[in-house]
Amino acid sequence: MTKTELNHYRNLLEARKADLADGLRNREGIAIEKTADALDEVQLAGERELAIRNLDRESNLLRNVRVALSRMAEGSYGSCMHCDEDISPKRLAAVPWTRFCIRCQEAADRHEFEPSELFEEPVAA
Image (cartoon, rainbow, N blue to C red; front, side):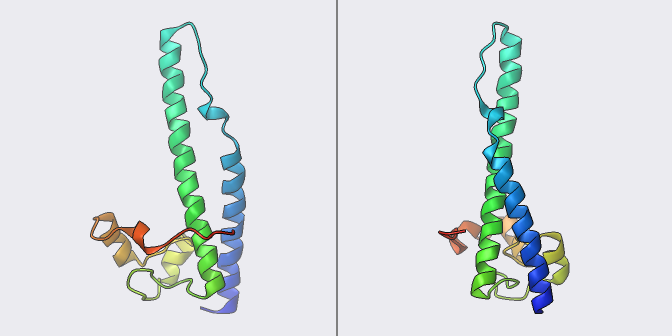
């Protein structure tokens, strides 16, 4: 991977990291609100559950972005963390925080191996 490509991905990841960090600070959607109407309570509970799932998804994505930036710093960005093959430029363009080539990602999706065993989140990001 050229230095220009690496800088391009770094800029994408840094921008995504900033967006996600800003979004995770907003936790208004998970506040518990009380109302006299039982139907409103049910609706608010559903909205709160959706907000919690969104925060969880964004938190996981932020973790993956931080791992990708850490891998850049250590020089392993662009290589699959499972098979050590290069990740295709097309895949990196679509998902710059990916840890796996498409073949290994499909295997992880089929639960043929546990992806979380292959990395730890960086301490300082």
